[in-house]
Image 1 (tube, helix red, strand yellow):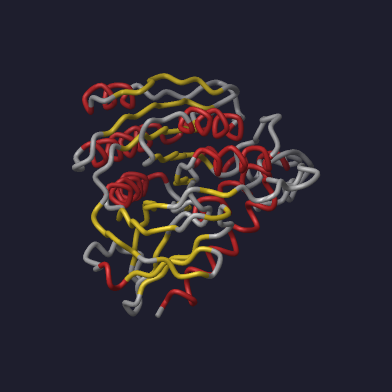
Image 2 (cartoon, one colour):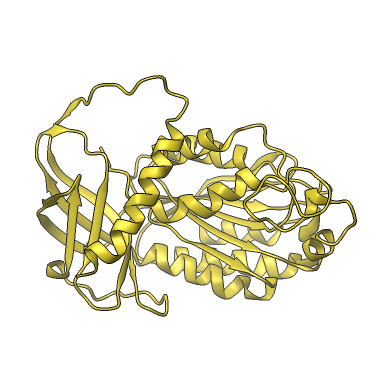
Length: 326
């Protein structure tokens, strides 16, 4: 059974993220008793080639909270309304691949709206500031028009951590529990957010949203990486400095984009060329559309700290949010 082999790895990641996000707290509050009942988690399943697996049965799933097995009472393809915030890196470097970017974004929206669930989408352009250019759109045509007008800014940096925090706060108020933040950003672009990564992580986890990230390079970002003395423009490594010179290359941003998605039921894809944006973003949209709704029973008692989920089918991996829902 892949419960131990795969899902425990994800639960460890999520536990570490939760610890980081709560680091500023002086002391944790005593566990508050929670009313039990049926809880629903949205998850996806993929095979060894990272292709979606859409025919798993209820008896092939397993779920635990804090190491205790829970009874799964229902499994079905998710049809609950989707609330999505799309964050687009529109810094100056996007001009080198704006056609590919627009095509990928429009393919993403087309696939999402073609699913069986109602979709509400908000769109934020992120460069030197984050600007929500469309809010709570429910029309595929209107979203397509907005994405077709995506245009690069003149600034060479982003405030993606701030945009993530704003998106998280918005989705935390959503009437639907099925929520997603989708980020399309360029590797190596400097990050100018004043927000720290633990705060951004805390806000994402609190929102109940899954995080999906597509990070790509184009000729503009590749040219940045070889500028002498321009450590601020070096490709992201997860470290706060580049290989040449000094500066914030987005190390704190990349910690969030690398570590958080899998712990929330999402994924991150990294692309070496913008020509792959359409296929990749279509795949991300298909994964969101293809989520399972897994419903299980939780007894009355303290709020659990960690969820583990797995399956019995050989070669299949389940990707799910490891932070318990209330």
